Length: 215
Image (tube, rainbow, N blue to C red; front, top):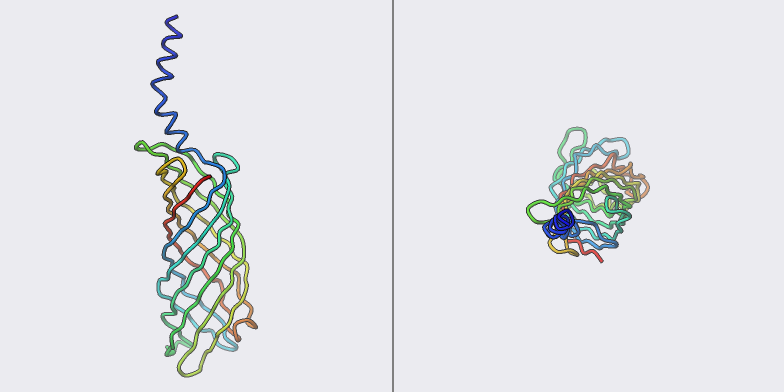
């Protein structure tokens, strides 16, 4: 009798923690919107017989994603993102080239997989995660020098890959605030689609804040 009473009391005492654990648990399907900033690494490109060096200003990024929790610890998603940045400086043969307004835009469609660890901290569900993804990228490039030493105004598709890490804070059982870092890279572009310009080993670092809704 005493053992049953103790078990019942323990069950009642743990009810709040069970509710928190449920709040921290992953749901089924979800959608998420993210906004943030990114910074591409300097790029040593190719342009016919020259090797221009491109540097970039920090740019802005937006992303929408839809995914599904396969288990409480693993989820997969499709993410569609746009990143855009101004070209800060262009050098050809170590000589600065005067630029008109020039930018590089990058659209990506990525299939991502994540490993999550559900935790309960400070009365809220917290889910740190790591992940990776593969997909394709489309470059929208508009680079023009005032002297005509380089002109590229077209687009090109490449293969893309990324590594991801971040954390989700559960605001309600269905709404979470997220923070995500991604390291994104692409393979070299083809010169034919960029008026002779080849963008080599494009790499970016992106920080994004997001809002996730689970069904």
